[in-house]
Amino acid sequence: MRIATTIFLTDETIRPVRLAHELEQRGFDGLYLPEHTHIPVSRDTPAPMGEPLPREYGRTLDPFVALGQAAAVTERLRVGTGITLVAQHDPIDLAKQVATLDHLSDGRLTLGVGYGWNVEEAADHGVHWSTRRALVRDRLALMRALWADEPTAYEGAFGSVRASFAHPKPADGAPRILLGGAAGPKLLAEIAAAADGWLPVGGRGLSEALPALRRAWQDAGRAGEPEVVPYAVRPTPGKLAHYQELGLPEVVLQLPSAGEAEILRTLDDFAQYL
Image (tube, rainbow, N blue to C red; front, side, top):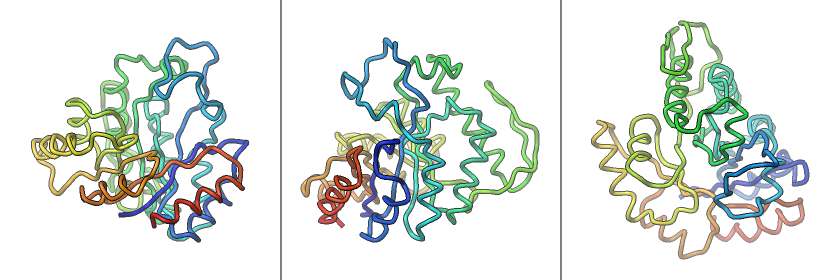
């Protein structure tokens, strides 16, 4: 089972280049970064992780810029988003960013996709909350059209693109796409329809959810198995042993949003799981 990490990188934490070096030298498999463009000061949306909202949410680095730095100074370290708020992006621009990072990293990118929780943040991007799931599905389809080998047009409910020359292409046609969110029939159906697997935060309740995901996968006519990658996990030996017993390919451990000294101590502690 591969051991990757995630962290809220900010203007106050360890820098991405330094972190990437340390991760690769120690043998960690990957680095995933979250995304928030901004956090409105006045909001009615309760933070799912509890109030007050941690300081780092309003200070996150742009994940594509930071992951580009990490990929440039490593050879094996995989890079990923956990998660990209696709509804808050222009899909043509996002398709270019994703393809460029995947191309320059020689196919090391995982695109973690989510719907978000902050209504006010999404509203500032023009997102209507009730249609955000359909919007994400539509934008992913548009992006796939731009990644296609031949110029491919797309006409969707929320956007369209003409058949276009759009290079570079992702290394394997498309990056691995993992959809985040809590288990439920709608989410599992979306994973089976539009993703390569699931990125469940914390990884709780997987024993019950995995059979339902596999049924949705089979019902959608998908071959093979969906990839399930527990995300932002606070590790214990028993927890990681359980994931191995479930046959999961990868787990993403949560690093503190902290400076270099604390991060290096945490990596030394997490090295026991490698």
